[in-house]
Image 1 (spheres, rainbow, N blue to C red):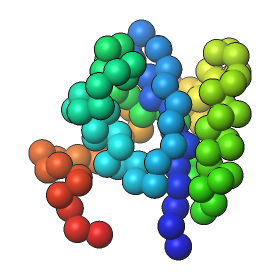
Image 2: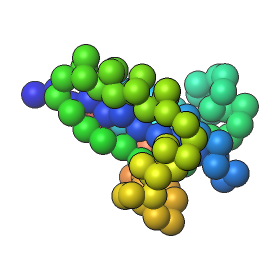
Image 3: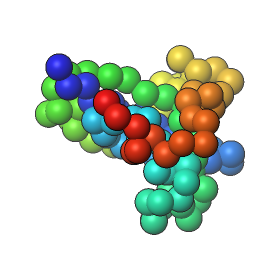
Image 4: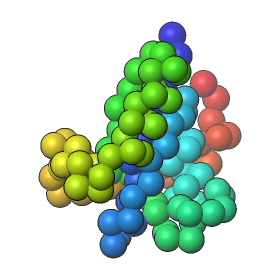
Length: 104
C-alpha cells in the first residue's frame, strides 16, 4: 500500500514550508541538497520539523492545503505538539548516499 506524507520544513530562523509527497526521505534530501530551486532554497529551509502519513493521496493533498491556509501561529502549535524543540526529524536518515539511488 502506498503512503503519502504531509510535511513541514523550517529554516533555522523558522521560515516554514508545507508540502506533500509519496517519498519523504527523497523529498527531504532534495530540499536539504538545494536541488529544488525556489522558496525553500532561497530561504534555506532544510530542517524537517513535522510530518504525518496517510494512504489516500486526495486526503493528503487536502490536508496540505488546509495546513497551508492556517495562520503561522496554528502551524507552530501543530509542530510543537509533536516536536517541542524543533529538532530536525531526519538528522540521522542519510549517510552520504543519495536516497534516490537506493532500491526499494
